Length: 363
Image 1 (cartoon, helix red, strand yellow):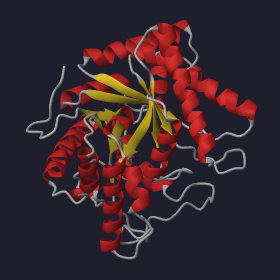
Image 2 (cartoon, rainbow, N blue to C red; image 1 turned 135 degrees about the vertical axis):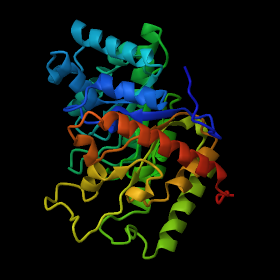
Image 3 (cartoon, rainbow, N blue to C red; image 1 turned 120 degrees about the horizontal axis):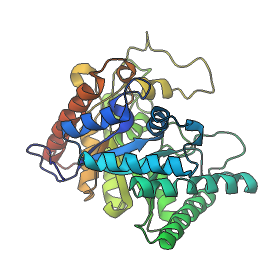
Image 4 (spheres, rainbow, N blue to C red; image 1 turned 30 degrees about the vertical axis):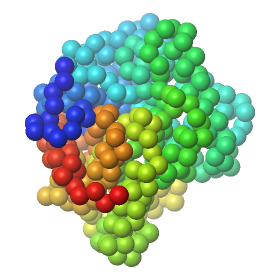
């Protein structure tokens, strides 16, 4: 069942990440899924922490979450059925972390083989895409060498294709995201990896928060920008130049998924960088202050509209999924899933309408 957003000028389906509807400690996955469906979403992307919480709800040790036991696969099938019974489909399960660029051959083999453990669960849940974040490790055990990183993604693509050929099911895809505190934190770096991997089932995931957190924002600047540029005009020009390059270089079929979030303009006099140098400076902001789009009344301020307009200009017609982490999702209040689902759907509908009216700046 497809439920288009009211008066939506585009036909991209609307989705939301399960974690963006409430923390699993306080809010059951079933309640969150019901809230998403009632709000109008047709796509769910499953966060691994929500899958772990679902196992706990059903009396299963979450440390076994990717062990293909009969009970775990039964629960995965049950979850997939629940999502479809709510009139939705699962876009992906995420995130894979710290996978590519591992130098030690034994560790590398173990890491890639661990990814393959997800394949049977994807079949049980009836989803066809793995969501992989760029490696955040900064130690000497990983490399940023493009040839090595691309070879790892190519091998993962081949492993997924071999699994699909063996079981006769749909192709399993691998989507690759440039995380804002990762070694490869620019969308163009993830694009270069995907291009060099050169596999039909390996593509790119774009995330408006992670793109803007690198190329536009600085939460520790009172103006909210300035990480790379002194003035607002320079920051806006930089992101528009970057998006113009995206429109010219990226083919829509290689964009596997788009995630959307804005973030709150915080007061750096009260919001300080983490004291622990091992914690990325951007991480506390990312984990506690993201917002749904078009929530300027809550402090949202980044040029999300300009980014989405460019992504749509590539010809991308796939799902638009919200991924919001915010301290309000940790509140033990039964209204959290419904209120956040409604906020998210409303904001996404307004964003799409505004992006579709934006005068092209990338020509």
